[in-house]
Length: 84
Image (cartoon, rainbow, N blue to C red):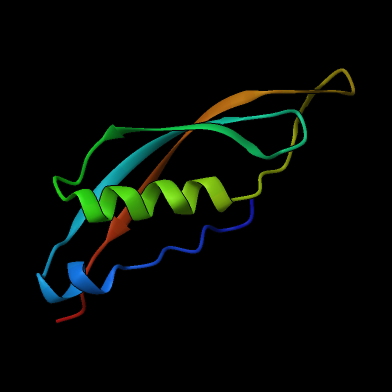
C-alpha cells in the first residue's frame, strides 16, 4: 500500500480539531479504491472529509488468490493530531 497523503484542513487546525477516523475501503482487483465509507467518525466533519479523500487517493497492492486478483475490504485508521 502506498501511504495515504493526509491533508489537515486549515480550518480544522485553526479550530484545534483532532481525532481518529476509521475509513472502510473496498479495493478493486487492480488495487484502486472502489468504495469508501467512514465507519468511525472523528466527530469533526472536516476531518472525516479529509480522511475520505486520503483513502480515495491511496493505492493498494492487489490481493491475489491462486494467481487471480480479487477485490477486498480494508479498514484504515487515520489520525489527525496537532503538534503542541
